[in-house]
Length: 362
Image (cartoon, rainbow, N blue to C red; front, side, top):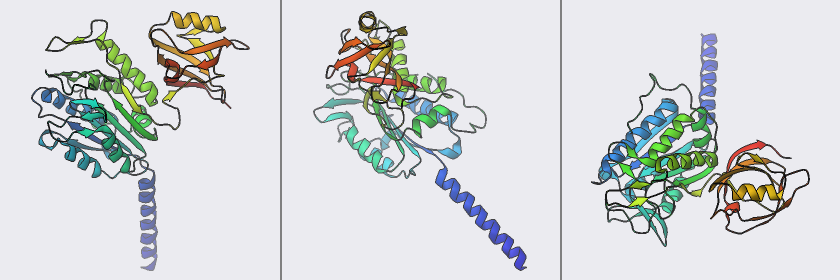
């Protein structure tokens, strides 16, 4: 009898050890989907967004690692959203993802989410509440207009595989669990509208979902992923733009970035004096004149590789030229490339999204 009791005690201790180890190392994603589904103009399309978002996450994250909550219909309010966030208790290894689809705008206080005449929810208050919950990775994504005039006048969900996934996909892990820090983005940049289709949902949310599905098995940082999102939006707008029911035509839409994680591979880097540009749009740069010609012939969206002066790391980055200008002064680099001698404050060269680390430095 004593022998059996001893065996049972050992078994309980081993089981407790396994459970404790699971609790200490497991990484879970807490997803909060918020949508103004009662709005008479965009509510139907936002309902499609809710269904699509839920299905996309269920396709690539096992049920045991995923907790989904929703704030829709009558619950949609400033207090309802913040209370829902406050009720989530993630661990320090987990990811907290909040996606909000609604009307929006900006004023002197900042970007806000419109609450139908009630007290609007400023994104800085939403981000502050998300950060207080203590997750390792905080992600706030909004699909809302980003204009000063306030709210404007006027794709089916994919099938999930049987039984759901067995593991968290590489992309979801790299974006929503491993990217330590705060991600804070909106689907439209300053003075841009975001568009909702009644039957297929929001254009940005659909681009977001397409990017998740096409790249599900790839590791990617947020800087690179946002580049994929911008490419998707550019494909939708093309050269003709999008016309709304009032006849207004918008010709472009870009992701607005307030914050990206600053650990691991950086999301955004500025060029500095001493950096060496090695290629532009795939063209090898032999010296400063090569670089000047390549930039002059480049489309507005320009990719390039650069060797970091601090530690020799070689990055591949993308930037948006400002009226064809990069904002740097150059000299020939010893051994090839264009040596950066000066960077103009506020220029395109100060806001480059990192696509990948090609080689590590010292």
